[in-house]
Image 1 (cartoon, rainbow, N blue to C red):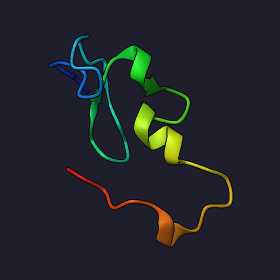
Image 2: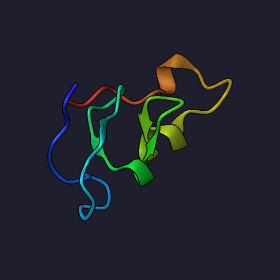
Image 3: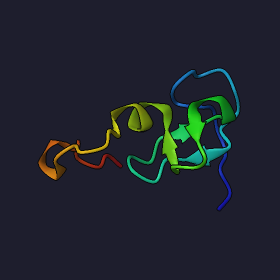
Length: 59
């Protein structure tokens, strides 16, 4: 998938990926490739967290 635009987290670097959870465009620094998540979603992903506590997807 081709991604174009600025990182929606830092708003200064070119986006290289899209978060699989929320759809946020993220640069390499703000994307956890092993998880497929932006830095914000990766920070929220905690082991043992109840499914009902996970934020809604935002598109």
